[in-house]
Length: 163
Image (cartoon, rainbow, N blue to C red):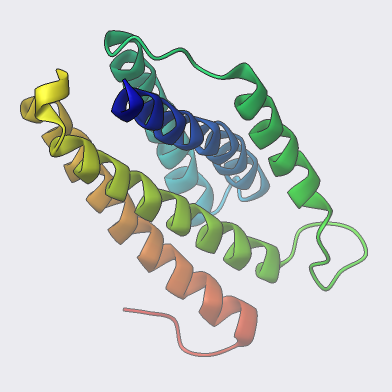
């Protein structure tokens, strides 16, 4: 029972992070609409939403309820995060883009770690075959975000973009 309660806390923490990640990815896609970043971020936002739904299904199957308070705090934190200084008094900047891509990269890295951790919990009723596509997609997201992050860094700081 103790292990399941720890698992519930762990999965609810990741679920809450996914709530914020979906909001951030959608906002970043909107802020970058019409650029190569925007299209890729829109795809990423949809994938993160799909991953969040997959996590909810796993939690449901394990008898773990979503903690609405944690989800609400994460949603609010993402909104408050918009107030950070970005080198401009108003509007979006190249530094904003870079920082958003870095936060999304950190989130994807955490999600990948969670899926890999769950893969070792197959005895809890989470089939490894269900987790492998999620792990593969997280790795793909990480690669795609890294390319975008390097391009955004080059734009923000004026050095050569990645190839």
